[in-house]
Length: 355
Image 1 (cartoon, rainbow, N blue to C red):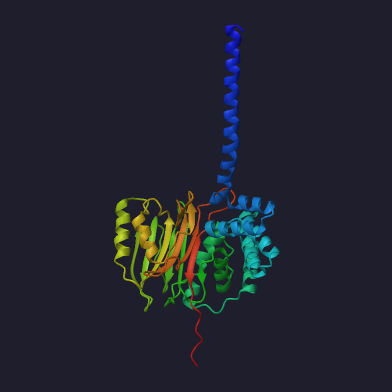
Image 2 (image 1 turned 45 degrees about the vertical axis):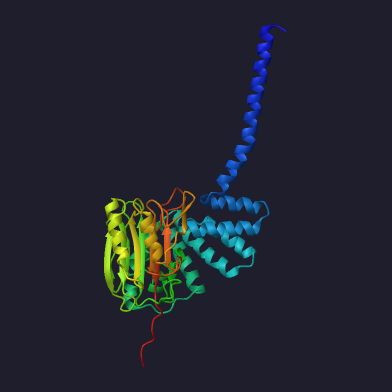
């Protein structure tokens, strides 16, 4: 065999080895990569559908439920699918709530404001039929319009809340977020609120924050984290501040001192305007945990309170167990799901008039 033939044979063998290595790499890499992509927390919908198609209905339901709870989407598909699977599993009451949420979030994809308004009003009527709301304090009624209007505007129907009753506005906010306690209790903290508190956050450029109680709004439009400390006996705000955690570490330090100086048992109401994520340091997160808050969403596969330009609202108690607080959050929004406000509140049952 001449030298050229030997060289050609060696080259062919080399290329064959390269091809085998490449094929082996692809045989291992792509299944692993597909698994990683499917199990990424943000791909909960596609992963749940794949599990269901594979005959793993229970695993699919668990995956979808966890994803909806972690990411609080503002588009209808995840809720509608979750409702269908819950009904198939005999979870009728749970399915009714998810169907109502799907109906509400269909408004965000409606062709015009009239269609969106009709969907919103239908969702509210369904919710009140299933879960009636008792009398609401007059003072609380006065500050329900603005948060309800902001939610309707995010769903493409800015005038939908104008003609609603106070109960309808409260039901609307309740459908959109599961962080409204109508029994007067601050989540699982064991503390009953001495006053009605309603907190709303809007992330993204131009977003603002509301902290309504005792006839006043302690929020505002400037960017940052708003925090009001509330006396657990009198219901009066003892201190309030806004901290621009986009701006600097100095602002983070100022908020850290504010929270560390707060006494145990004090109620804290939190609301983000625009953004408060850039300088949300580990030390600040530890202080938020001390108020009974928890990292309930996921950002880049890691547990988090919220991400860049997320809406975030919470009501907690300093010294409460981790996860006991009321919390609501919402991402900035994407091509399919509009950004929506995050609303959190504790409303006390109205007292019967003395006889």
